[in-house]
Amino acid sequence: MMKTLIFNGSPRKKGDTVSLINKVIENLNGEYKIINAYDCDINPCIDCRYCWDNTGCCINDEMQEVYTYIQECDNILIASPIYFSELTGTLLNVGSRLQTYFCAKKFRKEKSIAKVKKGAVIVVGGGDGNVNKAYDTACCLLRHMNTFDILPVVFSHNTDNKPAIEDEIALLGVKDIISFFNE
Ligand SMILES: Cc1cc2nc3c(=O)[nH]c(=O)nc-3n(C[C@H](O)[C@H](O)[C@H](O)COP(=O)(O)O)c2cc1C
Image 1 (cartoon, rainbow, N blue to C red):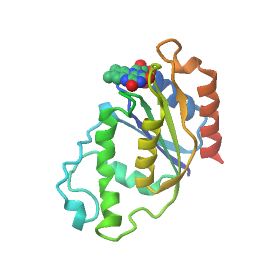
Image 2: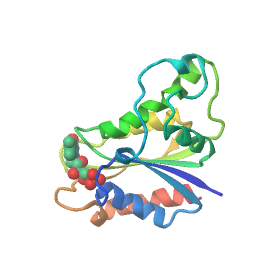
Image 3: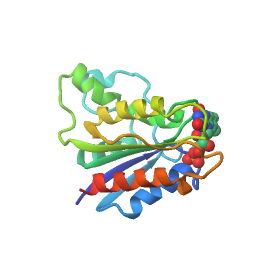
Image 4: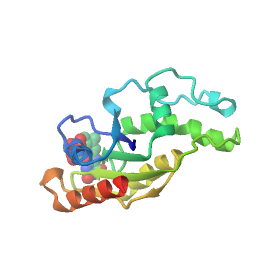
């Protein structure tokens, strides 16, 4: 069965990011797991360097389940509001735990994730600044998870004036994500 891992970087339970995530999961095949960055038991990496020599991560929290899901899943979606032109800091805290994959390659010379995945990124912003920095960072996180086939960014960048769920262009982008993942 197809599996999709979704990272939600928003603290707002009925906000713009969540409204677009809900649109994605409405028509997504298979099963999915959502990691709500603001509402999960995942601590930031503390650069203890355990993973320079050992597989995995020694911090025993909810990220351990996420590591397992990362091995199994077919698709990964990163969805976040833009804060100061970036993904939210809290989402980056979760993302910092992907450092173990970087260290696998660099120090342990191991390939830590066998399965190649498809990736997509949704970002929403009030309207100032641009989406490129957040998208670049999201792509960097995706690459850490062996995800190189990544769709162009889907964004709603005027949410101060129009909720993302009413943004026709963003909704078309969401449809592209669904067909890309389901195909
Ligand atoms: C701390 C903070 C920083 C923000 N920085 C930006 C920004 O740099 N660019 C932008 O377009 N919007 C910025 N915003 C606006 C949010 O991205 C926008 O309200 C977004 O739609 C919220 O998404 P959500 O409802 O999914 O949480 C910022 C909001 C906050 C709270």
